[in-house]
Amino acid sequence: MNTHAVSLVIPVYRGEKSLSTLIEEILPLTATQITPKGNGFRICEILLVHDCGPDQSDKTIEKLSSQYAFIRPIWLSRNYGQHAATLAGMASATGDWVATIDEDGQQNPADIGYMFDYALTNSLQLVYAQPINPPPHGRIRNISSQLAKIISAKLLGNKSIGRFNSFRLIEGEIARTLAAYCGNGVYLDVGLFWITGRVGHCPVKLRCELDRPSGYSYIKLLGHFWNLVLTTGTRPLRLITIFGLCAVILSIFITGYAFYGKYFSSAPVQGWTSVLITVAFFSGSILIALGVIAEYLAVTMGIVMGKPLYVVVTKPTRPPVHK
Image 1 (cartoon, one colour):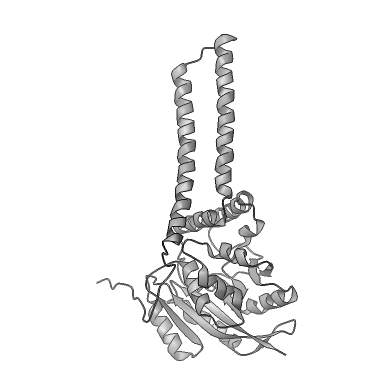
Image 2 (cartoon, helix red, strand yellow; image 1 turned 90 degrees about the vertical axis):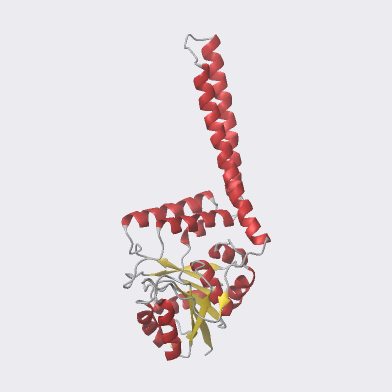
């Protein structure tokens, strides 16, 4: 029986308290495991990518890497965000497969075996964990997340977009290829969909987070959603074009109504009111269109100018000490 080597990538932002517990859970998986369907795998390395959070995660990573030979620390020069940190880990992974998981303990490392079975049984290149229970967050955050997924799936024309998850299992060649060319501003999962044709979703159950605050504020989550919109394709621009066309048609109807009221009806038509509404409406439409185009140009400029997605350094970038 062939045993597949799996590299596990964990981006670390606030892992000072949760990381040691998570590593203890992963330890049994570093020995050869036999999945329920008889496939063999083992985690050959754990890549802890330090994303320069506000706590002392760097010291925890140093302690764990000195304690376990299979743990490899990757030090980023500053905070680049979860997707960039994940790509930095994928670039350094050497396994046949690459798994990505969060540091907060919400995802169970033991589920990698089920995802591995799912991938091999269905000849898949990429498997996402598909939660069968609601995420253990607040109601407002869950509703906002669900709404963002619905908007992404409906407006951007890809139903799979709404099923992205940070718990992934990827073929090693796919992961390393993406990490080699994925530029700044590209949403990680969108990039994966560019180069994978066989994608599946394996049912798993989420757990409560360990003793750590969430590293994502609503502003950061909104930023991730907007980055997803911009890197998915040009469909939002087409929506703006359709919106502009509808606005022109609406203006024709308003003009017709004004002529009818003036020449065929006794209803008074206040000229300044209609002018004000029309100018405000179309000025807003133009500004929205220009704003979206400007965002696309900003993303394009970041890629063309060669702005690095991340920079790996040889020692940890420690948080400032507050006296």
